[in-house]
Amino acid sequence: MKKLILFPLILLLLQSCDDPKDVYGYDQNSYTIDWNAAADSSSMALIDQFWNPTDHYFNYGSDGSLLDFHYWPNAHAMDVIIDAYVRTNDAKYKAYFDQWYAGVKVKNGNTYYNDFYDDMEWNALTMLRLYDITKDEKYLTTVKQLWADIETGWNDKAGGGIAWVKYQLYSKNACSNGPAAIIAARLYQLTKEEAYKQWALDIYDWEKNTLYNQSTGAVYDNINGDTGVIADFSLTYNQGTFIGAAVELYKITGNIVYINDAQKAANFTIIKLIDTSNNILRDEGNGDNGLFKGIFMRYFLQLILTDGVDPSFKNKYVTFFNNNADVLWRKGCYKENLLFGTSWNNPPVGATQLTSQASACMMIEAKALFEKSK
Image (cartoon, rainbow, N blue to C red; front, side, top):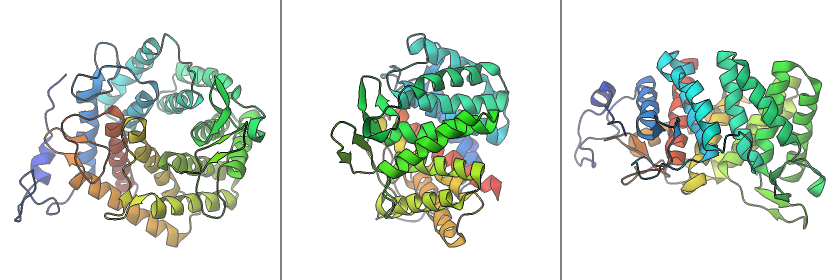
């Protein structure tokens, strides 16, 4: 592992000192945050502490003890690097694109296909972004190949929808349908092929009519297509991808219904899925769950930046968004090596996982992008 060299911004940001001091020896609320510098530092920390320079993928642990490969978190870690490149246009980030693309395939058994439809979808979304930046046809070709396989996950159980996993076709999950609708919508915008648009509409309509509570804005986790039983709990990332799909379809159709759907899902999230002590997204646990908050914030920001959002809602969204970023950086970051844990209100103890680190880095990059968009 490379030794992390902290950017000069840490010395600039972490000044002053009211008593009592926290574990870092400074008053966390006494400095102004340079979000561009914070994003530079946190995204480089992701590289320095997780990137495997030999096999070209992101390790699962920050301390060198977890070198195992996890397919879907790697997509989100690369999304952070893409965020950093888009924000800075710095070639040092772009240098990882092709390495990651090749490394992920090797570590995934020399293929991009996977038993889990949602895992392929996350990687397809990342590769679509890589194509958008580089115009390198290999990325788009891989997305289309993955999409052809993802389509096969649609079946009549529960009235339609993309299955979660190939050996369990009865389970229809929000995590395999929200991202699928986003992919299809973006492929349509890129190619203008009507088939992609129809897929986006059909998948979104199925999710809205099956897993989305149109009264409250809750997006439920899954439905068992054999029994009809809905697992009626909600997770932030499912809220996020439903919002993301609605935003994409609004771009395509101009139909305000999609913005209304997205607003309702956003309102539910920022009221119900929070840590009320800080008014931030709640701690949803480690492992895969560590990624959920960052995914929500990625699509939440897209909603904030979309014309057509009710101004009164947008003000609330911006306040909530800014508060999450502020609390995360001031309270949830272990400044010694810029690690983040599952809670955005408390720094991790010792090592952390790729999922939690990438999630927090997505939040910091989103905040830097928001500041740049003003």
